[in-house]
Image 1 (cartoon, helix red, strand yellow):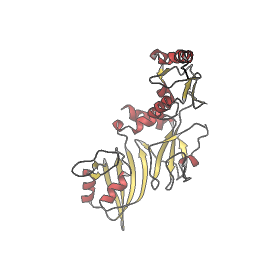
Image 2 (cartoon, rainbow, N blue to C red; image 1 turned 180 degrees about the vertical axis):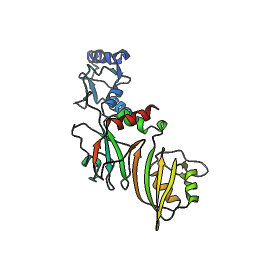
Image 3 (tube, helix red, strand yellow; image 1 turned 135 degrees about the horizontal axis):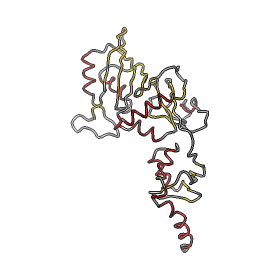
Amino acid sequence: MGWNTNDKTTNTESTAPFKDADRGERLQRVMAKGGIASRRKCEEMIEEGKVKVNGVVVDFLPAWVNPKIDKITIADHKLNLHADQIYVMYYKPRGIICTMSDPEGRPCIGDIVTHPSGSRIFPIGRLDMESQGLLLLTNDNIMANELTHPKHGMSKTYEVTVRGKVTEETITTLKKGIYLADAHTKHDSNRGGKRAHVDSIEIVRHDRDRTLLTILLKEGRNRQIRRMLAVVGHPVKRLRRTQIGEVSLKGLRPGQWRDLSQQEINVLQNSIRR
């Protein structure tokens, strides 16, 4: 079958405006700002041919759009570029999966947090299934990426109850760091792992065979606190995140959620700019 040169010429002409950087913003950035996905995921969707601009398939990068005049659709669903940005505080209980849906049918955030605006929101970061406490959700991909990027060093504070009586010697060991092996990190050739750190750790009180600790992290490797404490012989019995940056969990019981106040949003935005 011969190649239809007329179709090729027509397609080139119809996509030409989106190859002009003077048109406005990069397509993947506009999609991310619209709450579709991360910029990298948006790039994949574009290259897979799932994105149309003004009815024309745009499957190349870089592509440029003007969000004020261009109609963007993803898999034939229109992108609402003017949706209000949403920021939610949720008190995650134990036993809830940190996703908006779960193919295995396990209870997840999406079963509980449904914003009245109807906008798609998603969690910023995660808490493992057995942990509880403060979780932020948003439809603002840019803010989410910035809050989780290591360069900003966003602190997270936890109340952690562990088995046994933790000594000051153990506290010193934890402050120096514990070697943990991760599947997706470069392993230390001598010790078989990468050192994980806590930014601060304090003993709040001892209670029979338990110790309550306050731990602050700016790192955040997978199940880091649980793994570090297991290494030093103090398995975690209860873990609750109480603070992200300067935003504290308050006014909520487990399973409840609310919109962030404008003051709390400003605090998060200012922490990114610093």
